[in-house]
Amino acid sequence: MTAASPPEILRAPLVVEFPFTRSLGPVQSAFLTGLREGVVLGVTTADGKVMVPPVEYDPVTAEEIRDLVEVGTTGTVTTWAWNGSPRPNQPLATPFAWVLVRLDGADTALLHALDAPGPEAVATGMRVRVRWAAERTGAITDIACFEPAGGGEPRDAQATPHSGEFADAVTGIVAEARLDYSYSPGRAQTAYIAGLSEQKTIGERCPSCHKVYVPPRGACPTCGVATTDRVEVGPAGTVTTYCIVNIKAKNLDIEVPYVYAHIALDGAGLALHGRIGGIPYDQVRMGLRVEPVWTEGGRYPDHYRPTGEPDADYDVYKELI
Image (tube, rainbow, N blue to C red):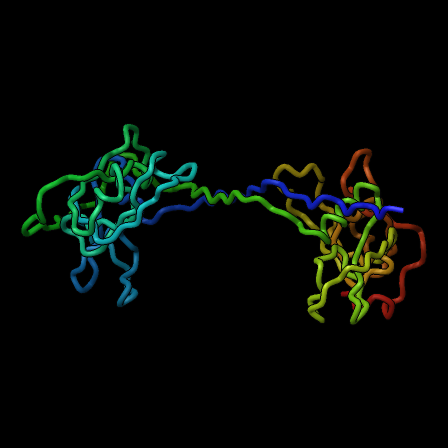
């Protein structure tokens, strides 16, 4: 008799996105609006240093600073690193250098991309200039990149005072944070997910402390040993604790208020979370006995509903809260 083959380890692309909207103070507003207008602004600190990009508070004294100055659009590379394989949404689609550029009149350096044919064309101390984007909106990407400028270090490069006033100033930005990667849940969670497809909840028991973990992680975090003994738990369980959700989540078709709970499935050594349905939200309570409700074709329980059994005694689940 041949043993059944273990399920193929799952793997799938995963994208985590978090668009963050923030308002701009007078300094950052002037800096980004200036880029839109083809002007690079910095700020002068208490000790007379010119910082580009500008900051709102002096890094030494922590005092608020608003003394804006205009600096040059040419500068000097202070350090660099070659990027031979640009990723999507980076400044250039072809290989380029990441550079720190000290613009003429500034005392600090600005990080950006340098368009160069190869690493042999890049050097610390080389002169570069801003290449402006064809369309500018008031963002750091208004500087499309830097490009070689030739020539030597300018003499007596000075920053000049600037009011920071522009028509139709940029007052807010959306910072797009995104992470693309390939995720594998591993052996233990692959078996757990495969079990859910058959409407079963599969955990793993620690051979040392005998606690059953659901979902399993492949090892006991307390004992530090592998968990390979698979155990089917539930399907019913006990609400150990819960919260009432009053804010509707984007792209989630659930009316508020609703209850999200920690549920200790029968036979499990810790609680998992799930939504409680089939009962008014204000009647959910600790100790409530519940069971999973599966939708047709669903890959996991849609929610849990009361079983009609008497509530569990507190002593039965107090260690699982």
